[in-house]
Amino acid sequence: MPTDQGESKSGAKPLLSRIISMAIWIGSAVSCFFVILELVTYPRTSDAFIRANTVGVAAHVSGNIVEFNIEDNQQVSAGDLLFVVDTRPYEAVVERLKAKLLLTDLEVEAYRQSVLAAEAVLEEAVAEADYAIAHHARLVPLLEQKFVTPDEVQKASSMADAASGRVAAANAELIRAKRLVGDEGEINVRRREVEASLADAELNLSYCYVRAPVDGYVSNLNIARGQYANKGVQLFTVVDDSRWYVLANYRETLLRRIEPGMVAEVWLLACPGQSLRGVVQGVGKAIYQPVGASVDALPDVPPSLDWVRLAQRFPVRIVLEDAPDCSLHSGGTATVRILPDQRAGQPRDGILEDPLSSN
Image 1: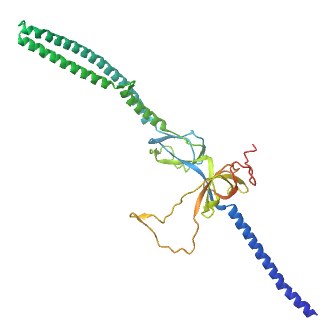
Image 2: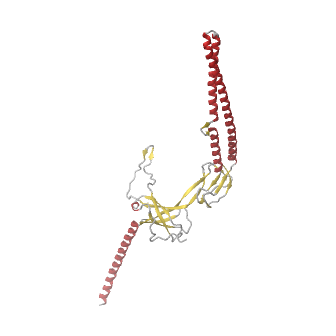
Image 3: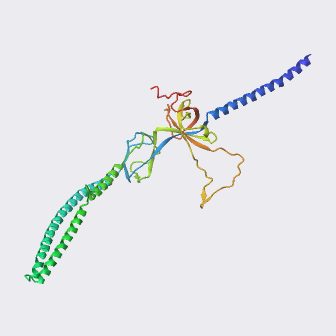
């Protein structure tokens, strides 16, 4: 009898083990099924990073930095004075052009007086030509009656021709004088040229005062007062704090389930325990592929043997709508979960409310 009980106990142990193992395998399979279903239904990725637009700050004019008002990582507002380039050379140009503008006004006035003088000369020449032509016309009939000699008629004709020539010369001089004035309608082109140069010089002078282009934070500041700023050479960066977004890299097999306007949940590593709301702004249409580059105008196709085909990842841009309680840093790590059944503007089912909405 004891032997039968021992045999029944020893037979029950393998059966129980098999049942437990089977339950574990079934539980694992069911768990995997629901995990895969969750990942397919609500695409998730931990390959995501927070980003902000950056603006490179460079001087529009060259010169020594004579005033410096910022520090690295300092918060600035759009329009704040960042630094000043030496204004003295540009102020000298402005003063010189202002003087040139006054001189141009004097020159234009002198040319206008020349026009008046040319008009007077033309009137005198016309009067002399009219007299010479009329005098010649009176002598021609008298030649037939022999009251005048042919020499006198010829002399009158030459004087009439000479007077007509002086009229043409005076008219040409009047046209030249008017052109020297530079009037085109109501605009004087001489003055307009100097005014344009003066406006450009004043603009360059204003460029000496470099101001913050956007609201944000100064980053990568490695210059100081006295350094020479070259025109167009970036000196540091301002991180735009007005709009933050997340670049989430998704496998191409999941892109068909992601569309612009979908709501996304975002978790930042820098803000543990806090869920942020975002909206899909768009899906990247291209990534860099080294394969297919050209060498000497010919395609470069390296040999390959792919046993496993890996899905490429494409960036999905998600604009954050919530303001987190923590400080954001461009390049920070994030995790993203897309909610295809929710669109921007719909109620926030299952998502934490915007902390700013209660204020």
